[in-house]
Length: 93
Image (cartoon, rainbow, N blue to C red; front, side, top):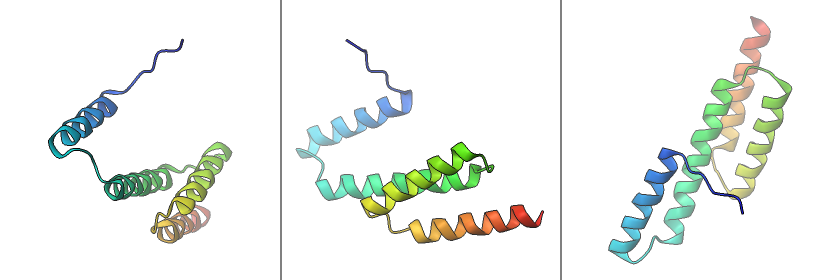
């Protein structure tokens, strides 16, 4: 049976959520959705910043944008504009 491994950051987040759940009786679903969307937006913006033009990065970025849009991340249009501006700058250079 495979062993699950967590990063230190994931462990801290799980500990924080467990403590909050014990104090309040649980985390409202709306808060989890809000936090997830915020994290997805942050990760997408980082992917755009780190985009170097490889095919693998393009595939991953497109997949992440589609998933985020399906999940209701409202910043997808803004993130796509940032990516387009970055691509224009790369072509001009």
